[in-house]
Length: 193
Image (tube, rainbow, N blue to C red; front, side):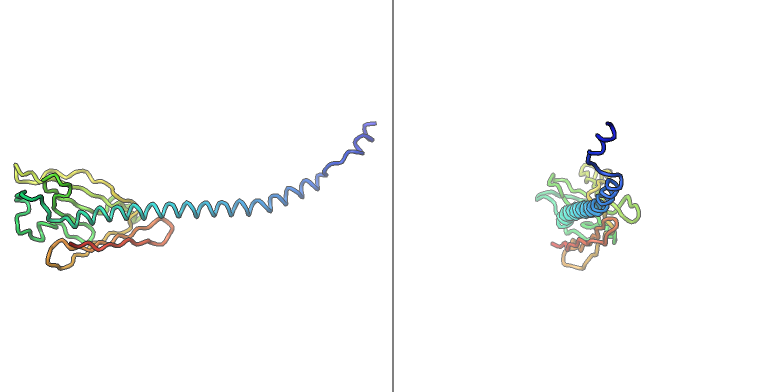
């Protein structure tokens, strides 16, 4: 009786199950590979957009401060930069990869000296860093430098080109931003007053 009962049952043979499994694998592996590639492309685009946005914000902040080079609040007599302001006083650091400026950048009636440069480089990818110090009018000396503050990451290069002008604070700033495994994206800004 047992053998007759199983004879009437319908089901899949081992060969049919193996063939169905192979077909499922053949269909789903390319679909999964396409999904992974699309996901990787999306994440790369998001990362690049974030890097570019950070570089843009850093350039805006840096250009605003460079444009303020030599500015002091009205009525503030500052022996750190006596009038008329000489180029060496307004922009004391004029190097290709580093800039220093003097101005009342935060509006607190104290002249600050601010420097920008690349730091913490790993495989030629660096951070754009900023530091500042205040003029102490009581002692007529500069205070201690603050710690470096990272204002943008993934910076490949930073070049300042100093142009002759009627005012000493005209500077051209070029920043190359690169994400790993991609061609460089360039952010470029001309700063002048």
